[in-house]
Image (cartoon, rainbow, N blue to C red; front, side, top):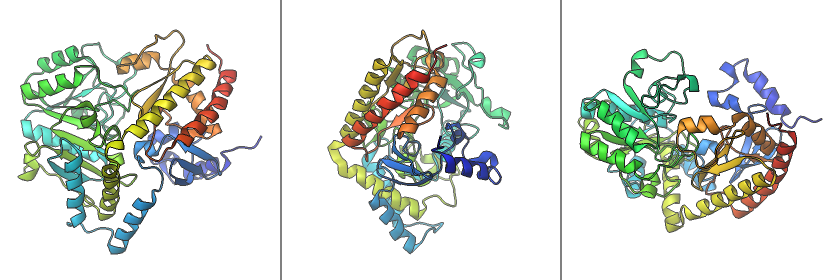
Length: 446
């Protein structure tokens, strides 16, 4: 039998002789049957080095909201490259981009640029601690806020190390972390406003900020239950904490003004990444002037040689103009297509007696694969996700989908980009039908 991934296998083997573990981000090793190598992409499609074509719902881990290689963005970057690739100084483009963010985001009174959302997270935490004079950051169990020491505290701990329901563990998934970092966080369970209130009260006067993904896309695409966002806002105002919305994934995806527009709230600080640059290394910290004051007066250091890089700014200006140009049509089209895809996948699952239960807003959703005997209904927190998600079975189904030319993220997340069209959804469901049939024939329920 011909190996459809032969060149990717060969390149991955070669890479391990020069690149640690053969990849440049640990999560990429998750891909089965082999980490794929790609040659080019266009719109909603991407091609690997073996010539396999995929309808891409991974879409650069969500960064490619505008699809692969949009011509206008490539031209914008190219024109800037002719003028200069780096100044380590100011250029008018940075004002252009900042003004567009002010226009789009409810919480964007002032802006600072970075190269990745992980950097912005660190900047936001530093700023919050300086603003309040307090040591602790409250985050939610299972939430991902970048790969640095601070961003991964409490991220996806194993079940035997969860801690009790009232005091979730502050475990870090990586070795080599400064131990004292763990003591600067308190972890709460997502989607339990009463529990959150008790955690905040127990640490009264010590918490600088509450940080959260407005929709927890990195773990199961869990939308907030009624009252959660309101409780976060109330507690922050009551106790003088900063409300930090991590919109790395949700930014510009669920509304032109991000999830804060979609859900109707205004944070003190917002973390933006991925879609703000459309695939270039670009990110931004935006927030209220009062919350940014320590940066304004220089008492909080925020620096970076490549901050406000003109190539990235040119790309971002094109991306934001694209969103602005869509006006009231965004995100309706992406949402409608996503809802069709979710409904179609569920229909195929029911036909083949596969316990797949897609959940989440249409532009992003998670493929929940229920374990045998697991309860039906929405998954609302990390622990429930671990108890009910059949990760090995999803991995097998994803591999079947990949063989048919449909690409989703390894952990189960799907994105619908602005480049996807009705034809893509229709074709993806035809291809998925074959993948589901193969999975049903091969998978043996224990």
